[in-house]
Length: 187
Image (cartoon, one colour):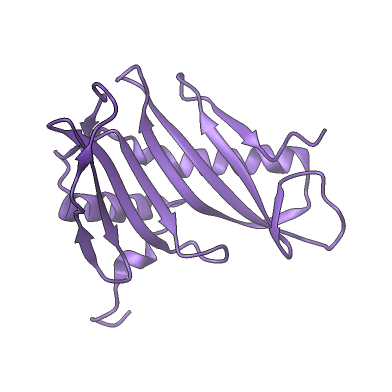
């Protein structure tokens, strides 16, 4: 890796090392004490597992705010907040968001798919959101997993995006149990 290379774009959410890198980047750019109700991570594209953008959503002084860090520009952008339509949104410090659970949920999602079918490979996270629900003690995980189909035959699983790329959606419930919300309901 060269000295000028942006290592932040090499963060792999499915690894513990990647989570350490993500947490370090969040601390550096947003501050771990910054309060938010949603932490959203998006990747560069359907074939890449490189992070493109990290976004936080929050409410302050009756205004809805959104800050996002762009990997391509290596800049934190803070657009002007807008008037809030919600009465009071529950928030937590970014340090309390359970990003350490991402690799485990990723592994569980793959196991759920592979239990139903063996026709997919090359699993990768496409987007990942952590949200504070109505109960402020609950942070849910919602993510889209992409996979490549191993052949050109019809599949009853996943949603075809293009070519042999399929998507599956997963979410945790209030107890932290992972469930497939779209893609494994073949019939």
